[in-house]
Length: 153
Image (cartoon, rainbow, N blue to C red; front, side, top):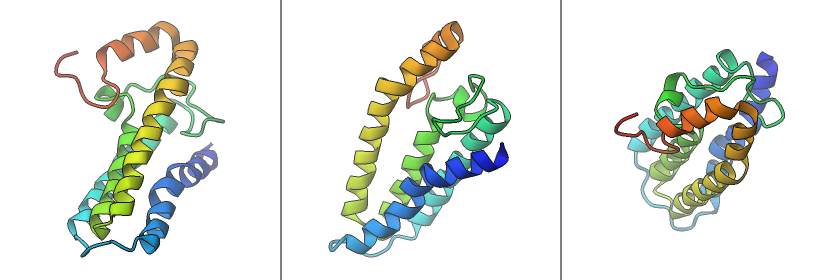
């Protein structure tokens, strides 16, 4: 199962967060002076992402891959705060690349990725979670915000 989790990590967020940004930077004719703070944001996003992958693997008994999803609803760790912390981690990481390279193209990529993630969550993931986890999912989504922590449960 560990190899499946590793493969899913490398294929899915790995491509979006570690392969695409450096390639896009090469294409960006308007990039500015690199901003070192971008590295801090990249590290933060990577740590968020890895924490979520760990929780999927240990608590959910699955991976982030659609073909090998968690068997249990994951509600621990960062999932206690928001329903989609893995996507938040990827977006944080990609925003870090945009900051590091002062790249308008990477900033646009980050915004498009956020829109794509949002549409995917609403159209596919949430209906699937409702079908798979029923009342547990309904209770969870009532108390935990999709993208931002709620001020009270």
